[in-house]
Length: 108
Image (tube, rainbow, N blue to C red; front, side):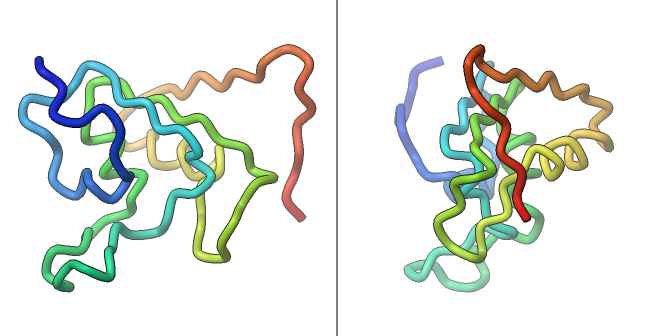
């Protein structure tokens, strides 16, 4: 498969690519939002399901890199728990990984 774009926004997966890529890497996944929207889109083009579901549907393997202590905006919902819950209906088993030397941060 040829890459159409190497880097793009989470919201660009409202419609899954055809054919799907083997791997989709989602960096800064703590910045996931509830739904995919864009101020330049018509509301009819906005996502109708959770953004995390769009990303899981977009490829054969979706990798989420996230730091729960790094939310930037209040509407950002990306957490490990969100990904784990979204994976359940797909019968996927998330494989959490914490690099050596890092400290987990819990949101209050």
